[in-house]
Amino acid sequence: MISAHLQDHDEELKYFEMGLRRFKGHPLLYRLEEHLRFRLHESIKSHRKLALHFSLLIIRHAPHLLNMRETHLLIHQLVPETHYFAFLKKPRHFETLTDYYAYLAIQIAFFLNLKGVLEEIQSELEDKPFFKRMVEAALLELHPKHIGDRFASDFILFEAHIKAHLNRQEAGKVPELLDRARAGGFPEDRALFLKIWAYVLMRRQHDAKLLLEEARQKGLTGPHTFFFIFDLLFSILEKGITLALSEVRHLSNQSFPPPQYFLLYFLEGKCEPKTLWHREAFFIEKVELQRQIVLFYTALGRRRKASYYERKLHKRAL
Image 1 (cartoon, one colour):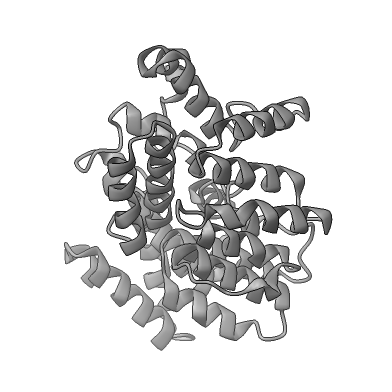
Image 2: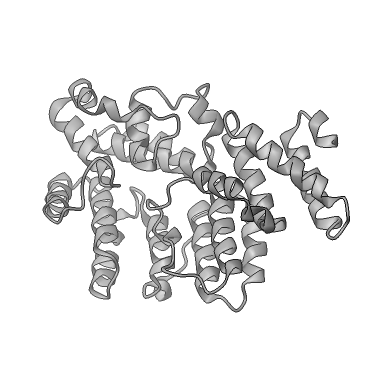
């Protein structure tokens, strides 16, 4: 196999995709598919992103390989947690197996920052408005732009729209937009989460704390929820970094944590440029880390630091 001699993973992926696209129906195609499965299994322990690339190739160009239980389970284990990104919420049911594969492909292409693949999927789903909006929300998360209030009634796109405003200069617009959306049925947990974030950026910490307490009383908080970011932040403000971190250090034992732990990992020095996390983290994970760092330094009143990271975030210099 040519790919076995390639050191450049991008080239290897190109060869696989070219072969899968060009030689459909060829009697020896199964050899390429077998090697693709082998490379998926081989890369899973040491190359997180590469393994997910192989998974996407299987889903897009050789979905019949998912009939193999081992491959099916492996790919499911590889896909990161999605509850932090509301637009990726799994539908209650899928009309066809093709829809299910499209959903998996959207998730993976989003985490791998593959704009071209997302747009290709979108063009294939002209008669599937739900999935088309999911792709549009994914593109907005990756590359924010202002899309106007006409999307306020479309909750799949609305949160991506809100995040485009969720910076220190524009955070003041967010609470009113969220109140209007919440009255129209926007999920309460997401509304509270985004509103607390906006209040911290606005330096309205008292209001942010009141909302966090409201979320706590409604059973929405805890170390395994996205509200953990604020629990950690206010603990640091009240107790200092050393004591606050000592109370939650037991949560930082994963190589690739869910997004609500990114700030914790950053403060423990586990996201530095030479770390495994930094090398294998997805683009959107680095975006979320930068957003949490901006939030942290804003809460501490360190404007220069917050501005520095916000500029990096705006330029996507991650």
